[in-house]
Length: 58
Image 1 (cartoon, helix red, strand yellow):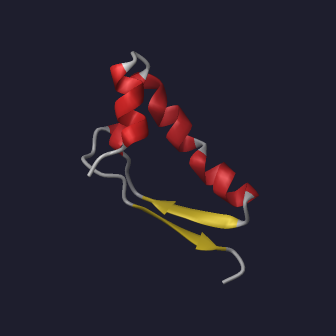
Image 2: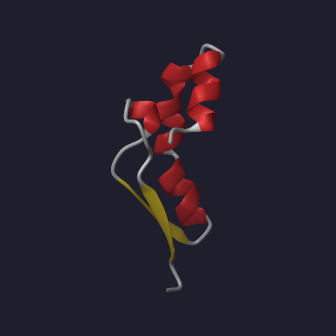
Image 3: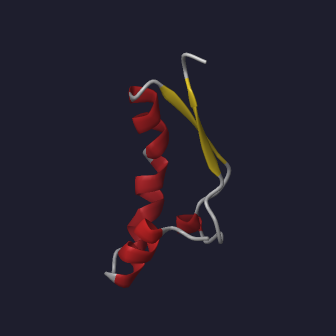
């Protein structure tokens, strides 16, 4: 479990920025015609990121 992107950011001194990147994920998925469903992220201090993505056409 975990997030390699959040781990990399933390190891390189910019882990505090990760919540902002994660916050943009919903807008990115919308642009790709999907919907992101997520309650929490590793960047927020949780052990896992509980997400799933649904295609808007479904």
